[in-house]
Image (cartoon, rainbow, N blue to C red; front, side):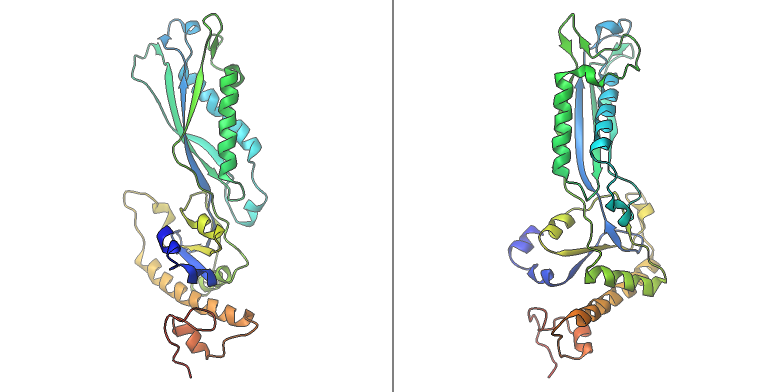
Amino acid sequence: MEQLEKTGYMEILHRGPVFWVDSADSEPCIGTAGIIQWQLTISGKLFHSGFPQLGINAMEMAMDVVHYIQSKFYETFPSHPREAEYNFTNCSTLKPTQIETGAGSINQIPGVCVVRGDVRLSPFYDIADVRIFIEQCVRDINANPAIVDSNSHGPHSKYVLESENVSGRVELKWLTGGENGIACSLESVGHKALVEATLAVKGTVAPYSVSGSLPLVRDLQEKGYDIQLCGYGLAKKYHALNECAKLSDFQQATRIISRVRTYVLTLELNSDPSPCHHPPLCRLYIPVCTHNFPALVPCPCP
């Protein structure tokens, strides 16, 4: 994609909507979430479980570290007012998805615990701000590990052993660089055409947003492309072992996409203050009309 843009092959797409066919359920997808993946390595003090006062339980500390960061996250990045406008079903989230400790015996207090997870971020927030926020949380914890102590693991669970001058530590590693989500323009010709075409073919239309993420689309939008999302597979089969789609949905998709092209050209004609004087059939069936687009093929109209 970057090379195509660099060499100018995508320049024509600045002049009209770009339909990115990579969502599902035969409806216009109007928003996706940003994403970044993280890893927290919590270092405590390995010790015999019969002497909890002499160890720092890295697994318990990991639980409290995640809880602390989550609490601060939802205060800092609450549900955004525009999420309702875009039919998001949930707000931004930060959660663990994997946890592990080093090999050892059940009767040992673990000295190391690794937690991995992700952030799914509303497109109305910036993933760069999330990075800054989590990095600051980790600095605060390492400066004073006691701030995450929930006092819920018993009287002998501590993250600072003052007599030994030993404290639990947190190391943050970003597993991905992160990228922002997209909120598609709801006023563009492309969106209106996709909605009208879907309604005409299906009889109903229900634009939706998801907290899943798509690569590239936000970057393209920020470069001036009118990105509109659609897709005709089955969301319930995403990443399933038997991931599949219905041929009937693809047949329906062909009719929708055909109508989208018709609606786009019709809306352009209605909104263009100096419309092309070629007959409508030229605009609909000749790939390029020289009035609005670079002349990739000659127009056969007199």
